[in-house]
Length: 147
Ligand code: DQA
Image (tube, rainbow, N blue to C red; front, side, top):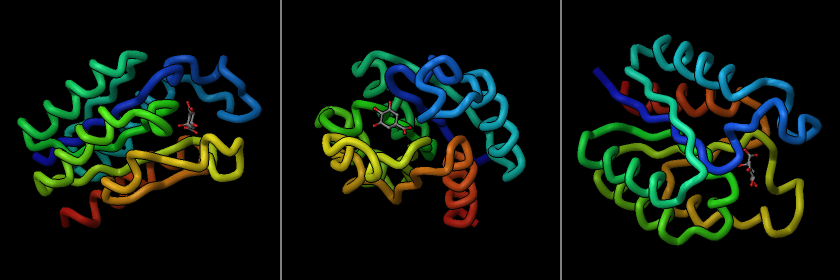
């Protein structure tokens, strides 16, 4: 069975409470439920996780490589500056696995520091600006790629 890790970076555990005008009213629990449903709809085994800790996120990317899992990742603020995360993400795609970067908001329509992603250049692709729907589109993209 195709395995997909849906990984979420810092402050995404605060969805629903955190800046609802930007990130919407859905909670992290909603994301876990919907991510599971959308992934299972494609026949994937899905594991949805969140961490505020860069080293834990890097470890999960290593786990994806070692276990052969594809990745949907919202790196949150790590997107914009974490070279450690970028290097770990590169290992996923160099291993022939897919890694789709997602964002709930559209970072390009926001502050200038959000316009740069250090993860995007090593990702299979990026989906941004569709609320939790960004994850649905990312899972659909992986389904198409592995079909
Ligand atoms: C985010 C966008 C990032 O700029 C921000 O730091 C986040 C969330 C998004 O999903 O829109 O925490 O990744």
